[in-house]
Each structure stands twice: as structure tokens, then as C-alpha cells.
Length: 107
Image 1: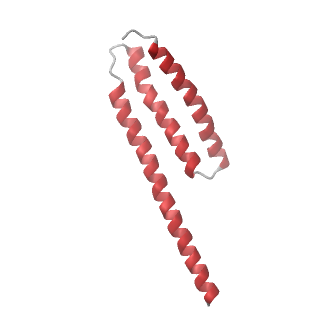
Image 2: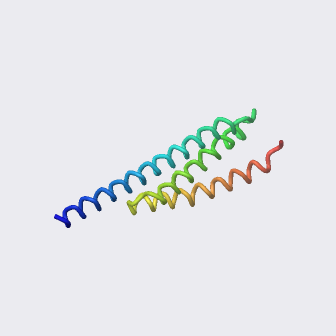
Image 3: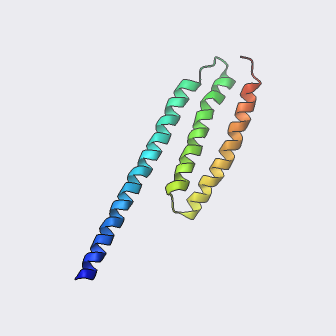
């Protein structure tokens, strides 16, 4: 009986920990998405279509990086974790490219 009680208690604790992790993960993804959406609305302010495009894409790419980092923090699937790592690498490079291009544009 004590073993059964211990098992039930352990299962309950694991379930509670999983629920806490799930809530934290969902909250992190929601935060990433809200931040990205708000920044995309604020950033595309130029009358130049090329500049406006890059201004809108920068927060979109940063949002992808933030979400990929959330995946690495909470995700378990090796294939998706590898995809998240690849996204971070690719998006960081494109963010750097777009920032360098923007820096060369007339103000």
C-alpha cells in the first residue's frame, strides 16, 4: 500500500511539474509572438519600400530566433531542436545582413 501511495504521489508531482513547464512554455511562446507582432507594426515606418520591407522583416526574424530559443529551452524532439538551432544560425546571419544594409541607407 505504501508503494502504491508513493507511486501515486510521485505521478502527481510529475504531472504538476509537467503542467508548470507547459504553462511556462506556452507563456514564453505567447510572449515571443506578442513582442514580434508589436515590433513589426512599429518598425515599418519608411516611405522607401525596400527600407520598410527590411524594417518589418527584422522583428519577424528576431521573433523566429526568440521562438527557436524557446523550443531549445522546452522542446524534446531532436529533429525539431536541430531545426531550431539552424533557424537561430540562419536568422541571426540575415538579421546582421539587414542591419548592415539599413546602416548604409540615407536617413
